[in-house]
Image (tube, rainbow, N blue to C red; front, side, top):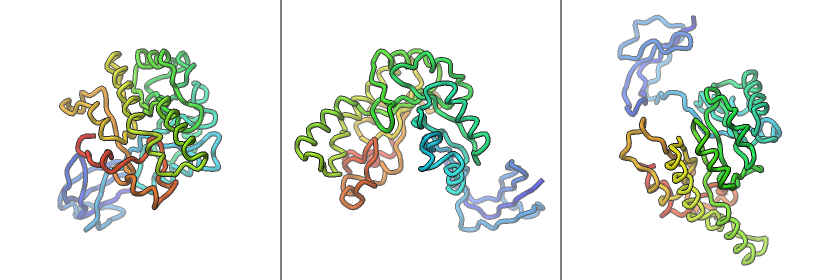
Length: 300
């Protein structure tokens, strides 16, 4: 069985950074400790001055297979994941066709079993008319149910409140939500199109998909989750106001409602629209430095 000994690494793990050696045998870490030089190994790596971290888990990827493979596929994107230190991914349902049925979900698992270079799981997708199909999902096989409570890409918007009540009250596992209030976005979009015609400046993107649009949707999702005891994870929050929705006095292992901020929401702000143009455009969008989730890194 192949073995590797890594010496003098600076290890980041479980909230601590410490210097140590690691002995790996096959696919398992056999030992972590100082002075493992006496252990025989097939490969010895001196990691002095290097940072060693566990493989990352990416909980939101868009690998574009099936239907959009001119952009990427499970093999190409999992290869990129390996190169970046990601060893597990959770893939979203906005492929073509969207993952709205058990048959389409199974097709993804079959593709990944043949082509993925890392560990994988897939989200089942919610629509305005597939509650019965969603409830057939084997929750032991999926990472959760993805609900677009705001339009992003593809025809995945769920804006039927009766259907949302059904998902939140009856789906027995994690719901991951993209939260932006669609009527607010449409109202803002119409106003800016009336003002600028079809040439809306790129920096107005943050005013179309505004703080109000994000908070109205996130707060509604939290309200539904509290009403029904749903396990909810709100993806890529982008405003400081939304952070007030989450109770950080509850230990993480007991939380039913959680959230995350993406790296770009922690790094960029409204000043970058002029410099980066459409490269700074995303949903949920980059907002002002004052309202950026990056100002509240310890709270999200």
